[in-house]
Image 1: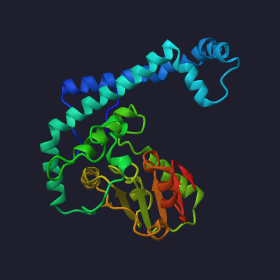
Image 2 (image 1 turned 30 degrees about the vertical axis):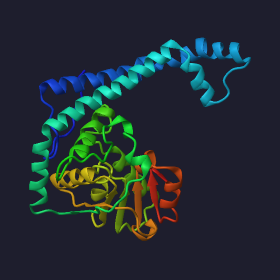
Image 3 (image 1 turned 180 degrees about the vertical axis):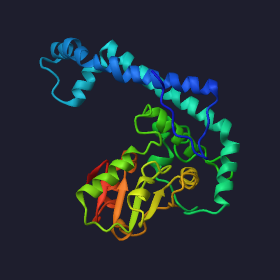
Image 4 (image 1 turned 30 degrees about the horizontal axis):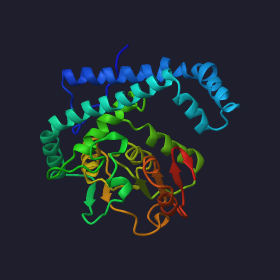
Length: 296
C-alpha cells in the first residue's frame, strides 16, 4: 500500500529520505492503532471491562465517564492508549525536526513571497495578549503550541502545523488538507443559495487549510483569516500566495460583533481550542456561521 503524500507548494517543508521514512511509519502506526486495534476495543469492553466494573459496583457502567473508567482498568485498552500517545509524540518529534532543519529556507521563502507582487495582505497586531489557556499549554503536545517565535519572521509553528496536519490525518483530508473548507463552502452553497457572500471570515484560520477553499467557492468575496498566531499567519499568507489565492491574514481579536464583520463566518479549529464562554461571546448574533459543516 502506498503512503499518501501532500501536494507540494512553494512553502512546503520538505522531509529528506530518512525523515520521510519515519513519517511513513508514523502514518502506518496510526492506521494500525485506529484500525484493527481500536476495532477490538468493543469486545474488550463487553467481555472484560464491563463485567469487571459490574462485579465491583453491582451494575454496568451508565455514563461515558464510567465506560472510560472501566476501560481504563483493562490492560489492552491501556496499551492501546499508551501507544496512541507515543505515536502522537513520535510524529510531532519528526515534523518538528523537519521544520527546524528547513527553517532558514522557509523564512527566506516567506520573505521572498511577501516582498514580491502579492494578491493578499497580512497584518500582525503586536499588542495582542494571549489568554492563559493558550499561552501556558503546549496544545496537542506541540512545543510552544502555535505561538513559538525564536527569530525574526519565524514561520516554524505554521510550517509544522501544515506538515503535521497531513500526517495526523493520514492524508485523508486531501492533498492540501482542505476538506473542511471544501465541505463548509459546499454546505453554505447548498443550504443558503440566496446568501450574498461579500466577505468571509475564517476564525482560527491557523495556516489557511480551511480558509482557501472559500476563495474558489466565492471568488467575488473578500476572504479574511483571523488568528492569534503570528508564525501561523506568516506561513498562511505565503502559502496562499504560493497557491495563487488572495487572502487577507490578521493577527487580532474581534473588536466588534462578528456579525458586522462578515456575511459568512467559518471556523473549524477555534472551537477545538477555545473555552466555551469565549465561543459564546464570539459567535453572538451572526448572519451565517459554519462550524464543522453545520450552520449554528
